[in-house]
Image (cartoon, rainbow, N blue to C red; front, side, top):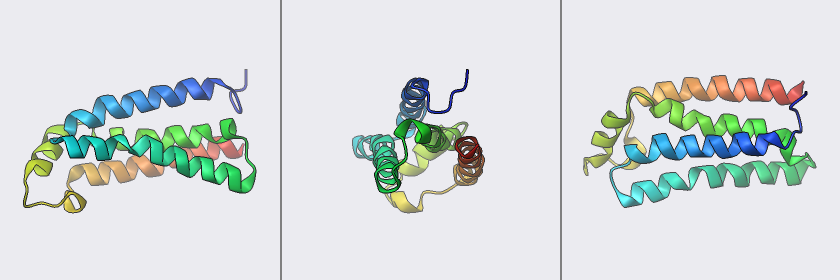
Length: 123
């Protein structure tokens, strides 16, 4: 069974969002951080929706890209949640400047997941 343009991607997308919340939210030290990070899947969804509207793509065909983008952040944070939480708890470090090993890990995850998902949807 070919999964391209399959409604199963909605289930995969929901699972990716659940993974996002399960991994990323515990790494956030304050309510404001949790609110900010909770908007991530919605912002990615809006961007993908805009792409689909602009270029007339079927949304289910682009859902693998959504899954890849949503999984990037949790994979980048895995193994570094405590260090990230500690850094974000420091009021002297602005949110935008909180970088560490999770930055490189997230960048590599972005390249891998986005590359694989774009390869998958272009087949």
